[in-house]
Image (cartoon, rainbow, N blue to C red; front, top):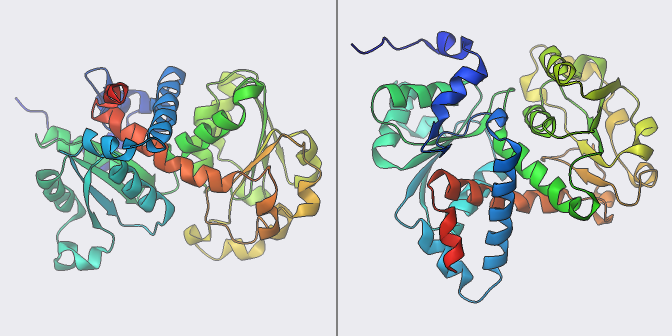
Amino acid sequence: MTAPLLSFEDYLRQPPEARMTHYVRKGRLYHVMLPQQFEEPLMEELFDTADLIKEITRKPNGSGFLKSVLRHKKAMLYFTQPSTRTFLSFLAACQLVGIDTAEVRDPSLSSEYKGESQEDGVRVFSSYFDCIVMRDPKPGFCEYMAYLLDATGRSVPILNGGSGKDQHPTQALLDLYTMHRSFFNRGGLRKKRYAFVGDLLRGRAVRSSVYLLSQFQDLEFHFVAPAAFQIAPDLEDHLKTLGISYQLSEDLESVLPEMDCVYMTRLQDEYDLSGESQLVDYSRYSLDLEKVQKMKQDSIILHPLPRRDEIHPEVDADPRAVYWRQLRNGMYLRAALLLHVFGAAHRLQEY
């Protein structure tokens, strides 16, 4: 007898550890939903694959070979929340490895305008495409759709391209890939001090990156934010459980000289309920050249973008600013992830 379908609330009420058991097939990731899915060996595998993709694209006929690897696959990019970098990065990643794509970015131009539910819309996509990349403002919706498709027998891999305020696993992966490459000759990600700056309560990229980084040893986190936008209590509890050293602060300049990585974020005022962002002096959480000169020469500055005023454009030319490199790394890392999901990463050894 088939078990009754769980409601959205009941499914997400299960602990992440229980939900993640459904996101693996044949010993590899099938659905990509949470940063907790990526343990250190898998991250290293993906980083190596991304490096190999980058290397192959520089060789004669390399791009042609890459385009042949998954040319039999099709992907739907379903983005119901505004996006530039994540959307284009996934699009470019699909093109790198030969995946044909289609997109729905404006629900008013789809059958949702006629009253079709999102759930039915995603089921339609699963009939035409081999995977679905989703961004949705509703936390947990990507996960629930993966569950529904699995339960109703029309399962295709779903990759979370950003879920409300809660998770952005592929952004976190490209963040750590950028850190990995930057610190490659300095002992890697371990034994480093990381500062996360800005709207940390509502920044899903920060949340996911902290989850990934917390797997590594001898780290020290500094969370620099207005009190109203500090990290959520559950993230603090996670760090306490792991025994990871962290500090909460409202003073950016005092922490800059000791940091190996400074991760800047914008004000996430699209989530404002009553204009609360207007009550905060966000200029205190910005970088200009004068502040950057207080940082170590071998430190790095990241930003998930888009930026506003939290990093002055004059900082872009400083060698510590790696956020444009971080942006490009997303294309290679997401291409590596697609190869992993479809079990095709080994094909790169043929080249």
